Length: 433
Image (cartoon, rainbow, N blue to C red):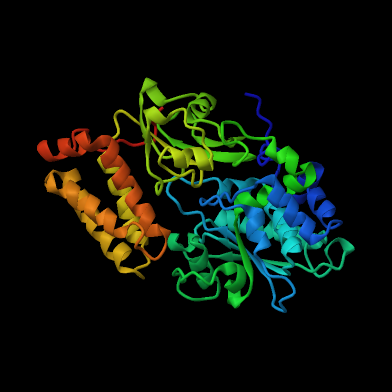
């Protein structure tokens, strides 16, 4: 399968993060072209391209931009969700480190399209290196007149602020992010109203993921038809374009792999050298820990939004955590459940109480004090969280549990009958080559 990098084409260039390097490789040409277009035309191009949000939900980007009311007398805002915190997800940070100007150019085009004069990039606070690199890139963009009161002499004014969050997974939820950005505790808001009409400071706001915005400049340059021509599998028309797949776990060469939407795990494993130590694939996540897990039976599922959903999971953030036949599924699910318990904002009872009790039950099972009734308790608790929590964090916390019991109930039973984990002490990924 021939692969032509789009989002990652500058990553291996010397000092790829600097403006001079970016400009040598089509940098800001998309913005120059966009500034000659009517804003509504830009929105239509993005709609026609079929670009879908890379943050997890896969919502059509152009449609989201089109929701922003015009001539309403209110300021419009763009907020970039760079609070990458999903376990296994690690593609936005490398993008911001290696090619921050692709994000800034995407921001400028998006703001011009929705008539916004202010954008905020909300970066996970722990990501200090990406934060500093973005801040430097923003300074370079201001100096080169790609940002500021008169962008490239067109009269379009745009200010961009890089904001460091305070380390809460919940702020990856767009309305919790907006509350945090305004200085409040990060907790999800009731929807409706939606951010498109009542977002940042109760004004019309677009919230986009880093990878989504970085995809915009090549779409403007190449055109909607070119972007739609990228993609493989039966649902290529519904999930076009290229994506960065984050591969981690028991594989020979973990990392970021750019490939067309619809690429399968079997193909990605070929790119990364296969499983480690000749081990066999056991289970994996198609889109981060909050997506129902897959098994070796799903090796050939096209990794696009619709195909993955039809197979019973979510494409999510294209974060593929790969586990082999020596890994304990109960232990892995316990670690994820502990994460969701810790990161629950506590606003709603199903998530706050449910994640706590699921963690207690999972610990009992892993340490050998669980019972067969605990499996029913887990499923019952998941049933009381799914669709009843205030935001998607609660729903996501149920996915590893329900899917692991679906595929590996025998392994849970072995923990009960054997009074402990049959796989012994936890294995480390460090030095496992």
